[in-house]
Length: 409
Image 1 (cartoon, rainbow, N blue to C red):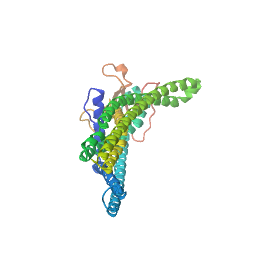
Image 2 (image 1 turned 120 degrees about the horizontal axis):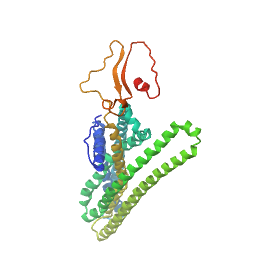
Image 3 (image 1 turned 90 degrees about the vertical axis):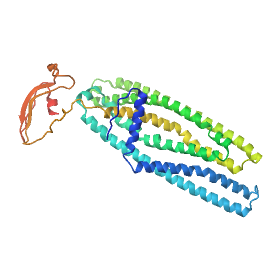
């Protein structure tokens, strides 16, 4: 994959570009991704039809009870028709919802699979000097938690927002045509909910970044402890290591609790605004029903429309949380993938051709982190000359730090 991205200033712009790069990865699936978007649109369309058929069924049921001048037989036939259409629309909506959920998850899993391969390959090609400066625990966290955050972006950051836009935009056009006042009241909570979502995104992104750093530290402590468990036990330092792990774990726990608190406080506020708007619709719509301006079925349409909007609006917190996490995870992940190895071939270097099976070192010098041409004393090995023929075995001896492992690698 191509991970090239321009150098940007500012954490927000880096996060935005990371989201764009993740979205571009979805374009590598030219069949599944468009079909998933189409399935979202169709599912949203069928979902918007359900309140209308439900309202018609209520009006026909009212006719059966003698609330209108329609003949009972005609009202009953119309009721069965509306009920059948409602069931059919619900089934179609469920099928297309299942389709876009499956495709979104499948695309996310394939992107995660490719990222894991690219990430592991990058780690294999980075120089020893880089691994000397970076803890393996941090690399493990990026290769697991950050890739998981990127994977969830396709479903929570692309497909679900599309569904929300369709429900709000197309729904406003359809139902405001019936009654402008009730339509505006039905959508009155949406601007407030979107404003709260934008505020929540900023807070959530900052908390996700801190949490990922704390989890990296926690993973690093665990990895170092398990790798050196014999040394820990030899010096009877178990209690010290447990206390150190407990302190790091508590720091991660504090951030996780703060993130959950911000999320559910925001969700509660948006839910309150939703029920407040529903109460206004019921109040004003009830007055209109009593005055004969609209039917009970038409009022039911608006209430059902708001019920449909409830779940996507309540999931806005989850969507924003997923976008914030993907933004932070993408920056941390691409930071590794974009690193250029310190040791590279010269431009137009000839390919290594193993012809007669002879390995020859001629005046070889190597340094992990320094400039041996300026300070030769910093080189790990220098002026190395030897030749090994096919089938020949040699031994490399020397004191610690003399470069034996360097030559072998």
